[in-house]
Amino acid sequence: MKKNILITGGAGFIGSHVVRLFVTKYLSYNIINLDALTYAGNLENLKDIDHCSNYFFEKVNILDAAQLKEVFVKHNITDVIHLAAESHVDRSILSPLDFVYTNVIGTVNLLNTAKEFWKDDFSSHLFYHVSTDEVYGALGNEGFFTETTPYHPNSPYSASKASSDHFVRAYAETYHIQTVISNCSNNYGPFHFPEKLIPLFINNIINKKPLPVYGDGLYTRDWLFVKDHATAIDTVFHNGKINDTYNIGGFNEWKNIDLVKLLCTLMDKKLNRQSGESEQLITYVKDRPGHDRRYAIDATKINQELGWKPSVTFEEGLAQTIDWYLENTEWLNNVTSGTYEKYYDNMYADRG
Ligand code: NAD
Ligand code: DAU
Image (tube, rainbow, N blue to C red; front, side, top):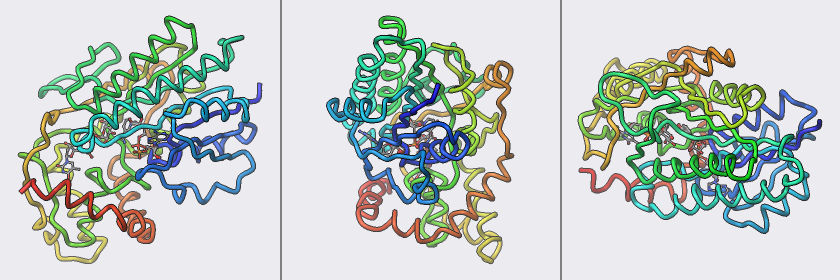
């Protein structure tokens, strides 16, 4: 059957990689990118594929149920891959309601639209919900998140994502819509908005600005190259068990401070700076409230059941990422002009 796949949030960081992969790999599918183009959405991320005949863009907010319905009818949507979300933890601490609206109510709007549109035959349609490992809360020094780890979200962002996951499961149970959920670890790579650790620090190193490390810097994250997340989504979309859930990660844990020091070393070399120069920019600042100490994904299930594994090592992925930012200064300058400076001052001014 010909597929007309609605990818929400396709103008964002991960969404743009998923859209590109599907548009270029599956020429017989129509890919409809639906995005409200918030501060995090950027059509520049897709300018290399926007001429493709199987690619369509709809500027729509997932809070607008009437417009969602129009898009389903216009494109005869057969499947959904849902990535649209407010995604930054620090912003969720400042404005939790924005996260409730988009991540919870927006997801339920989308579920309702799909349920209504597919009601005559749920069996040939899939609603794929892209979620995060943050729903599981924080780990101590040992252990991993598995698919059966109880949910224990600690930030307004992760609480809103946990809620959206619960709604997706509830719609599968109650209405028999076919779903799948994946929960992924921290992504990094090209087109990452410079509010998150790696692109923000790359941008600050380029501009010789302070590198604001939260708290003691010993918080741990599990990093995955964004293109590997996109291939994992492709794998789960095509081969995942209906109504099941898959953890996605690369068994690649780094303490923030070690990662920041590695980034400084690599960038000093690329920028022909003296060894140790960028490390001097490291500044310990006030911690993030409710900061989760450690995340670590057990990705055994997706590896053993579906045969997916990451394609690049962290060293390769990070080098590619740094090169991309150094070669795409126009992109970086565009996204850091305008309201970005105000955001930055507001977020970091009282961190000391
Ligand atoms: P992002 O912030 O870069 O992109 C989000 C996209 O959603 C943007 O294009 C934005 O314009 C769009 N959007 C936001 N609100 C919208 C609305 N109301 N209606 C329509 N579009 C809207 O996010 P990302 O980092 O690419 O994350 C994508 C998804 O993956 C999110 O669901 C996130 O929770 C999940 N995720 C992210 C990571 C990560 O490390 N970034 C890890 C695991 C899971
Ligand atoms: O685990 C998956 C999640 O990863 C995704 O669901 C989120 O959408 C994504 O934003 C990311 O969340 P984090 O909070 O882990 O990412 P962030 O890049 O904001 O922070 C990574 C770590 O770096 C975290 O311990 C906080 C710290 N940090 C972050 C910033 C922005 C700093 O020390 N200084 C900073 O300026």
